[in-house]
Image (cartoon, rainbow, N blue to C red; front, side, top):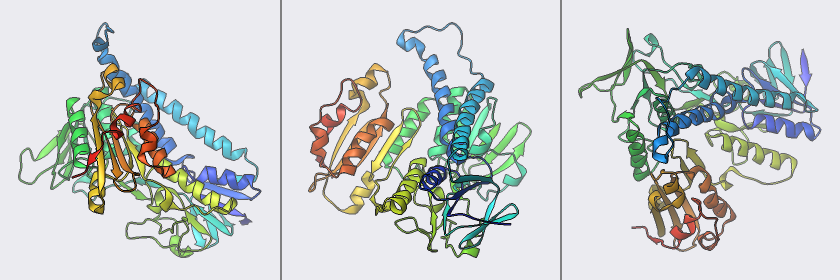
Length: 459
């Protein structure tokens, strides 16, 4: 059986549903295909559930600190993990059903459940039928990478997906991977009450960040009782009666860390290995990411790749921006490009890290003359009022053009305040626009003009 459409969207992550609805509303007969869970990683086992769990963990953390604020609690704070999970599940279900219903009630959009594989550059096979369309959009996302670690096949391990089913408190959670996802889970479960050890092969955490950011994040997490083993070598694993053992060194003691559970958080890989891309002629790189141009077109005209599978961003917001670029170019006659967007992201530990633009390391490598402003969170009234004074703010400026090059806000509300800087950067305005803007007191953002008024040469 063969069905013809104007467009086919493969995958229902952040970009897919919005694109399908936009195409459908434009009068184009559109099929959107999902092999597992509508909403993709963000809705089902990524952003929404993890941030929901982080909120529960923060509630426990704040409750334990109640006496600092004059709030006295009788007895110890107890976390009911079954109720924590139930709350998370309810919020995920609401989001999943919301996207599903949105697709089902949109005219010209057909939601098909099944695994899509290309049969050619204009056709895919799903279940027992072939779908054809002149335009095909790939939005298949990615999954947790499972490293080739000795002993892994003989031990039970968790990924971000398995963590969503945990309704108990691990006695000792060992996390392999000291980057964004690993650190969020580390703080979350430490606040729930688990012992937590993070194992990282590199000499410091989140190596893409500047060293001062990395160091400050480690201090924040160590202050909450999280243990770290950096420079880990000879990493392997084995099952034990009491749980799992993870090798961390061939010669330095301790050579292994024994925990009750192990979480693998060592990165992600694209879901492109079982799409039949070769039959369509779609090129991928050495890591399996689909090669795209600046408008997200693949090597085959009429086929686009959006979201994590194209390697041009690993966040929900970059995936959604991919949708905006493709939809604007196809339906509005625009000429938007991936290269026009400013890199920005957050690390959702507490306090969070908000990042935009270039790091200090990247600015130095560029060789340009730059100015820098830096301020500890101890100077921020909002932070002092909340007794959350850890972290700092740093902004980098081009000394000649006066445009902001990048910023790091590690501190309370840093993931929100960063947008003040991001918006000025997107407007192409000089830093003086932000410096001369009156902000509300008392907020984190009100200190940005003050900081920008005291820039120094980056030496």
